[in-house]
Image 1 (cartoon, rainbow, N blue to C red):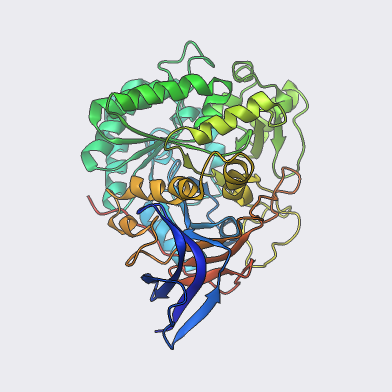
Image 2: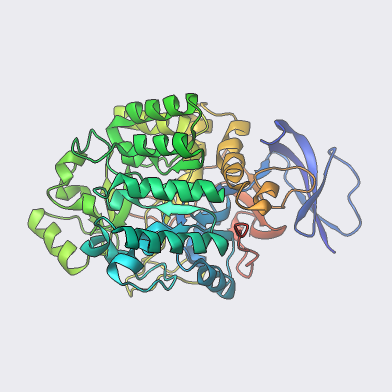
Length: 493
């Protein structure tokens, strides 16, 4: 069995607090030993000199919608070794795992049970086929947006329970897309998840500042459910759902934690999000509450900015699944930039990308070519979330040490999954016996390069990336025939 020795790097392990120069011996997809620098390597070891580089556990993205080789390669260049779709999820999860395995993946992958799709099967008569690219038009389907009868509620809760039994990593809840539904339904989901020992991953419904008539403040709803049922509740992209009210929502979370709630948060370092233009909160009449106008929306496929209310209504009616960029903060304004940093700096805040797949002008959503074919469109966070976070928080602002950066990008996301997926216990750490999912970073050059106009430019500064001990990035570029990714499954329950 051929071994790899990463020699002379600065090894950063957030699990033990280690930050020292050492050699790492990798064998059979596992970290075999951490050795003092200069130790004579085994005769069968391929030695890779990583002196002057930072070596740590690969980043674990809890919120990735790429579902493609092209998208995962962009994430690999950003330091990600495990890309999980936990906010929305796919259904049925058994088919989602089987499809990914059949196609091949550069990175590890996994899925939650999808609250949206379970409701859509029952309330809208939809068929769930684990298609990650074909269903965004559902966001404007009024049938699934309403309340459920007791019988309907029981049916779709049963679907979620079955998905957990099939290995889903938790329950993904897009509450923000059905913000007027009965809070009792969300409580039922939180109760189910807690009883199964599985986390919830929630895009919260509107906060009171955006809609004083909301049935319950979105952040408070997640916090209360975590306190009541004792489960693990994850608050997705707190920056985009809070916008300019981030101080208040983070205070709500801090208070809930102090009261014993098991609530975690994630953030990404961008002032714009991305979703289907048919989403309820992008209706013309809803935009003012978000401090948005139609001109705040840009269509991903064409780069066209929405001109006015009539244009918005037309696109929502004719192509409700069209991906769009939603500009909710102005990163050029120091006050808004400070809000983004606050969401990242919040204690134990996890970095997660909310990355989207790449779309080409011919409508295709994947490619095995590298570099990627020209003309692909996506959100820049697909290619740059982790490098941008490191640039902002470590290199430029000094708000995180390298140890803290790996804790937020690798260790904390893995620990959120320990209880539902035993295999997660070997991830997010760099000790003997850990999975050899490793990123090697040039600390002087790590930076994002993707922009809203050029969103598929890979990040710079990831020198090497190993997934299950196999190089996916080597010497700063993709290894084109590497597909070592495997499914991270929940334990049947």
